[in-house]
Length: 281
Image (cartoon, rainbow, N blue to C red; front, top):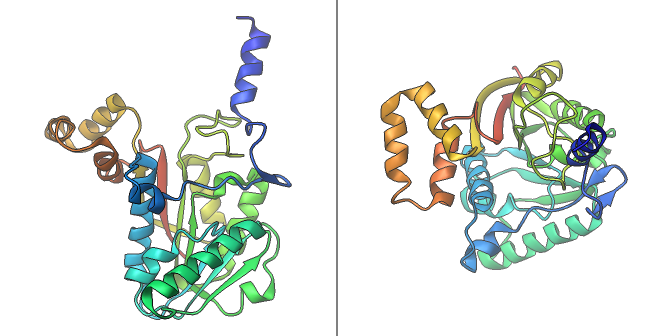
């Protein structure tokens, strides 16, 4: 293979796949509806990861919290907030895509029908989260910001701007839950998933979060790397016993379930990470 061909293939792996749904520079390709997939018996590691992070967030929302869901998509955070949220004061979903917002509104209608009434006020705002947020999106400060599996759908410059706007919308002491792929190497780095636009890693992302005035208080791994890397990370972090435990569980626990648990304790090696960030009081 010539050097030019190799460089061309590398450049291709660093760019969004042609045919990906786009609005301007943003990928609006949606993640699978894991609720529907699991209901029909389809269990994937990515689906369990998405369910786990939604549940993690919902269980940690304080009572009477105001929640903003940045790039809310079809509203996949809402079912766990309805079930596990503690009398939320309100929820605002932001998204660039009218089609996504229509699906999110339909999600609310289904949940209201299932629960017999609305559990908390909901509103949806069509906007570019990298531009200044409209007044209806920032009427008062938020206690919780949800920004899950979406940062990678924005070019780097716009992603940074969106983080600044998110941080500015939080009250002092509030929390941002941000998840995104953790992709090794220096930019331009090959994308793990070519429906994305720009993928970050921890070393690049955390200084940007600090510049936005946010403090990372925890990291939770969401997706596991290959098995040999998991074993090495567990051994390095917790010793040989942890690696033996993992190898034993691989024989009896379905991989899609086990991977979500194991990834949580090795965020340094995980291929996707949930960053728990706080705006200092």
